[in-house]
Amino acid sequence: MKRILLFLAIGFGLCFNYSCNSIGGQKTKKVAKGNRFYGGTIRINEGTPVLDLYPYYIYDNVSYTIACQIYDGLVKINPRDLSVVADIAKKWDVDASGTLYTFHLNNNVTFQDDPCFANGKGRKVTANDFKYSMEQLCTATPDNVVFSITFKTAVEGANEFYENSKKGKPSSTISGVKVLNDSTIQIKLTKRNPIFLNMLAGPGGFVLAQEAVEKYGKGLHLGTGPFIYNAASDSNRIVLTANPNYFRVDSAGNQLPYIDSLLVSFIPTKADEFKAFVGGKIDYIVSVPSTQVDKMVEEQIADFQHRPPKYLLARMPEMSTQYYAFNLAKAPFNDIRVRKAFSLAIDRNKIVSEVLQGEAFAPGLHGVTPPTFMYASNPEDNYDISNIKGDSLNVDLAKKLLSEAGFPDGKKFPTISLELNSGGGINTSVALEVQKEIETNLNVHINFNIASFSQKLEDARYMRYDMIRSGWIADYPNPVDFLQLFLAANVPDSVGQPSYYNITRYKNPEYDKLIDMGLTAPTMKETYKYFQQAEQLAISDAPIIVLWYDQNYSLTRWPIMALYPNSMNYVDMSCVYIDERMIAENKADSAKKK
Image (spheres, one colour):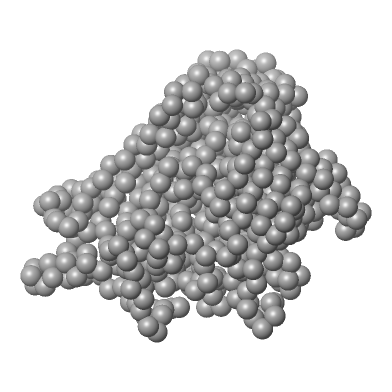
């Protein structure tokens, strides 16, 4: 995937202190080979708190980011290029039909030490642990929201196991999951699925210990990963410490991870987060407001030539789309003409240029899929969103459709409300602009109310809204991760049941058919052809108003090495280290300036 990257060396003349004896630090410091360094603490920030670290109840990006440091699966994502690479599975084979996967496991993987194990010592991971974990994934519980986007309909026998689990613990196993021996497991798919490995790289593919699940239940946060959840964690921060028994090593034979600990804070606003970075309290931030970037460049232009640099600034399109969702289950938005009228009455270009002040990659003039899949080195892998025709400002057509729906010039339009979470003020500013444009162009007034992030998610799941602000950040790097938002398979049987992905509860059999045809197509070119036909169908039905596609400016302190910004905001801290040579040079430079 080609990505737009801008690297700037930015000097602030600051002195950074990284302690090798910080939380979870080692008493005796190890020495790494190949100009790598052990020790120290890295501090990152997330805008919202972690909601849950129980893998099958993870549906937000923050929880996923933390969980990826604690758990491992058969495969994982490579942060450099977002490809799927080996993890606990050292290799795998796929048969000629593309439906039978055989995974061969590393035999030196152990669960993290914990009192749930005999003598508190983490035991070895075997293929039976993956079998157990997959059965947990396919068990119907209120805490399982991941089944519907992973094994459901994809793995042979998964649906049957799930239905049987509603009656109690199933007496049989998942027919498509077979343990051949302690280090080999097979998964049989119902049909070819080109994104199955991507799915396995997410929370649904993490391996869990039965002892830990039985002891902690939904409060589980114990895996095999590079970092251990520390008891010092609270609602204000997450503390992760290095797992001394982690199985992976780098190319030079150094045991991973390098750093002693990872601290995750939850500063809610981008402005305060940026201040914390400048003040030396955070080492890496994912999304810097472009206005702050402009100010930084202007004020520090004289330091750009500093060598070695002290900061790394990267810019790229993000696998993230922002939108408003409609409640399709009740009036007035059960009428497509009303939904289209609202969508056509909004000036997305103005929102991006004047409200967001350029803090977006592009206005949402196409589908729900962002433009990040358009840069593959192989042309057949390109998913060109310009082929999807979305809505743009057309006031005359919007008025005509609203009139045809029974509301000429907005008369007798019911009172409706737009729900949003605070988002550091950006969400409110956008809502105010949308409110003004709807009132100006359609003569319709909409109220809006601000809820906490967790409350907004709850209201979305249970359709307790008229319109609601939402957004989607990719779980894995494929367009279908966005297209699942409209699948009927992700809609529960009744409104009283939560819907975690398809919050509008949009249903269109033709859409589902096209997605299925794409998933079983023999080539990626054909897959994307069907996906784009499906996406056009859904966007034309307007269950959502696509507002904009995100971009990402990330900032990293230069001494932090092997932390790779990417379009998915996927972070793997297992290989990240702090280059002590850079720290020494920065200190020397600061001393000279004094």
